[in-house]
Length: 75
Image (cartoon, rainbow, N blue to C red; front, side, top):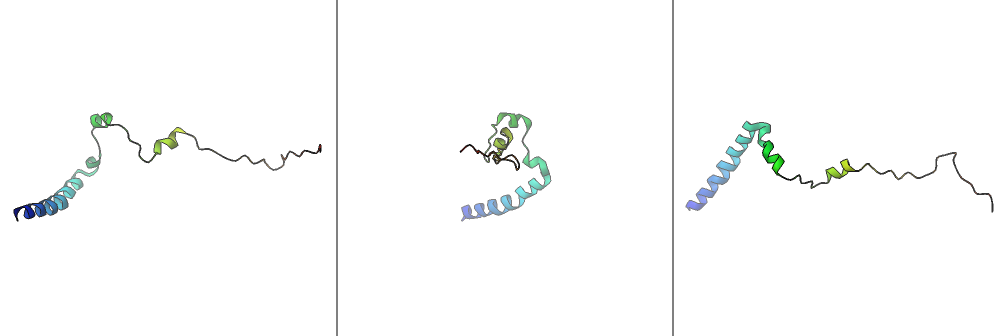
């Protein structure tokens, strides 16, 4: 019974009241890393955003422009 009470207190009091209150009080600082830790951790690009920055977009527009049609009349 004591374990069940401890789990309920931890789940409801700590996770549902104290953690959201601390995040609200900290504001943007709750979601930022310290500079030394940001330099230490690797940059994981999960969604591939850096691929778009590295390569220019490809254009597959190889249709001739109007008025520049090459017609072969030698046959």
